[in-house]
Amino acid sequence: MAQRKENIVIFPFMAQGHIIPFLALAIQIQQRKKYTITFVNTPLNIKKLSSSLPPNSSIRLVEIPFCSSDHGLPPDTENTDAIPYHLVIRLLEASTSLRPSFKKLIQDITEEQNGQRPLCIIADIFFGWTASVAKELNVFHAIFSGASGYGLGCYYSLWMNLPHRKFNSNEFSLPDFPEASSIHITQLATNILEADGADAWSIYQKENLSGWLKSDGILFNTLEELDDIGLLYFRRKLGRPAWPIGPVLLPMESRARVGKGGISPDRRCIEWLSAKPVNSVLFVSFGSMNTISASQMMNLAMGLEASGKNFIWVVRPPIGFDINSEFRAKEWLPEGFEERIKDSRRGFLVYNWAPQVEILSHKSLSAFLTHCGWNSVLEALSHGVPMIGWPMAAEQFFNVKFLEEKVGVCVEIARGKSCEVRYEDVVAKIELVMNETQVGKDMRRKACQVMEMIKTAMTEEEGGKGSSVKAMDDFFSAAMSTREKRESRGKKIGA
Ligand code: UDP
Image 1 (spheres, rainbow, N blue to C red):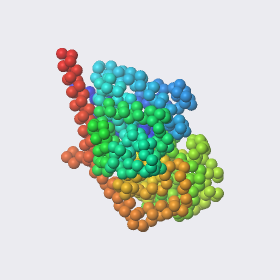
Image 2: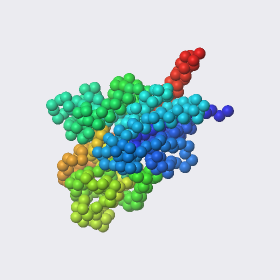
Image 3: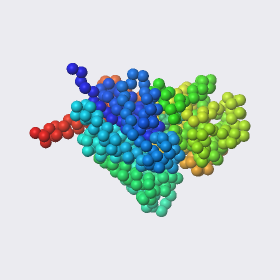
Image 4: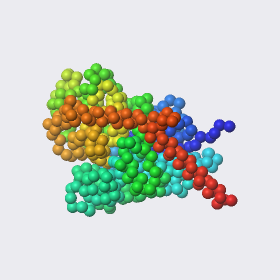
């Protein structure tokens, strides 16, 4: 008789930057062929996802009900890509209302499987509350962090301690994470900077991050060899395993179907890229939900033009305008910019959403000017691409710090969405990284070393398995043995 497959329940927060790595994780687990996967989200996200799954995928997409207007959000708000940043906290708060439906879903799955509970629940870093649901239902639970160990360590420590509120200085260290070296006040995202313990973000995070203590461990989209400082922090802090299983990246064929708002990315930039010399193009993009200020945009454009380098730039309306509205190049870019870069074929503007991994893996690409969201970082490093960092939010500031200070594959160009950016500095940083300078050469060499490190960590060969593959094995063994222990305890109690 064929052995029944164990069920894994996967539940990301409703944001592209979260759904994408969770989908990648689901696809990776599916390749192990031993598990069935239930991918849970709200109806609109599930609808979008159904076209992103690989053909013949057995991943089961399951909706749980959500009505955004019940929570003071615009109708049909089910993803951060549909709202301005200040409403993200409201979406987070609203997401805790999913608890009863999520619990019922796990109970229904158990019933469908004749009493066999799912092997584990893998939930988002923002869904700490799911750990107590798992506890109530006696199901193994793990958080999956799409963020780096180092970045998330700084982020966790900041929210739990709010150290910037305690010291009268612009620079301070993290009380429980001294390995991270000092943090500057300008590296704090606005919500952390303004946090005083009583605001909506502080309240949400305190509850959410404390919820992690009920989880059985954390899966990280990172690798041990690169990110040991952050992983050790969590092992020490939570007293739980931290399994570095990354990079978990979406296969190319699924990526083509995952665009912002379900729109497929514009692939004309690939043709443009293919006509450029090897290692000659800078890719500029700030992730799935960020944009820069109007004055920053103007200076970045001037800097790109003055650098004389080839570039692809994913442009979005600047801060203060609807991010999903049409891009008004005449208003937001220097006069004649668009025509000049088009005529000279020096630059290519992508409106809204680009095929990022295809660009990063292209032989014509040289460097990546990025906000250093961790998915973008992993995608760059998997292809040996050095970075110019411009962090905007959350733990991105610490990713840049880590990549610059500890790994040597990044230089910071600007910090945040309101700092002054001078076009001369943009030119200088681009030249530093893309020209044959010592810094540029070192960065390229190190980025290639990390690319090799990643390949080794992901090796699947029996007998020579890489660290990330082993960590994934360890995670499943832990889930299995915990279940066996709990079941035998249950039997003893029942006997
Ligand atoms: N992305 C993309 N095209 C774009 C912008 C982003 O494919 O034009 C993808 C990118 O490859 C990455 C994700 O969206 O997988 C962004 O995640 P990241 O963690 O870098 O940043 P976030 O969007 O969460 O700030």
